[in-house]
Amino acid sequence: MSQLSIPAHLKDLTPEWLTEALKGGGFIQNASVTSINIKEIGAGTGLMSAIARIRLEYDKLEPNAPLSLIAKVQAEAPENLMVALTFGFYKREVDFFRYAAPISCLRTPLSYYLDIDDSGQNFVMLLEDLGESTVDQVKGAPAEISYRALMELAKFHAQFAPKAQNNEMDWLIDSASDDYVALNSGIYQASLEPALNNFSSHFNPKTRKVAEDLYDKIPPLMQKRSKEGLTLIHGDYRLDNMFMGKLPPRKGFPESGLAVVDWQICCIAECGFDLAYHMCSVDIDTRRKIEEQALKDYHKTLVEKGMEGYSFEYFKEQYRRYILFSLLYAISVSGNLNLANQRGVDLAKTFLDRTLVAIEDNNSGDLMP
Image (cartoon, rainbow, N blue to C red):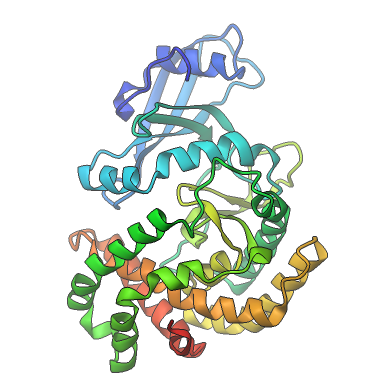
């Protein structure tokens, strides 16, 4: 941990503090930040961190000095902060940017400064500003975007599979650990009744029964897995966390492509989860259009990149199981929602609908433990 204090709020990010942070990261040498403009991003949408875009002015220009950056600190809302601390979101993301991002074949924001205290609550991240997102989960996106995102994901999963399978990432939470499984199971059980009440019209008798039957089945879903499929997963691989198209120039990456943000839920798990979760987050027609081919091409990429011994038959069955498991996320969001937040309501509705239809299309309820 550095000698700089960790700001508890976005308003604590002053020109003086930012000057020292950027000097500490080596992005400025003799320049000083003279003024800043802070604009909060995503206020009121239930984010697990307070996030802002900060535009900076300097007393002199230096080649590596960012003119704009994204800052993240702890959540303002007590209920969001509690969830983040319970699941270790802040430490997970800081550790990802410390240990995985620098070598990742999947583009993530460049980090200018990272710090977190021993409690895991007080943290700060200064990250590359990738611009305005061009994709929206509620509105959906062309099938080509999801297909491309999944092919890039396969390369990333294959890259980190050896490290996960050889226990080389001890900083990372294992999704099958008893404590983590119990937390997820508890969240589902607490969220189920409110979700069914808030969105009763979105369930038919069959899908309502699946949701109810899943009540005590989260542990076996999370713990039935193959070592050959283990890797570092994103955990929230959906359109709202992606930037696609023209990106800021960066050595080693094309200027037009994919970048992925928000790594707070990253963990060790089978790679099929990210794939299934993404398919549940895109619009139904898109999933149906690309699903069969994407599964084949994704698995083919895994094998070509070295993930041998992970048969397509097993992978496809696990994909169907992870479609079922994705209901945990849809129910958790739907059951813990501020109904006054219209964008949040729209997101919850679309995610729930898409997940329930994916479960029916893939007969995933037949794989209930």
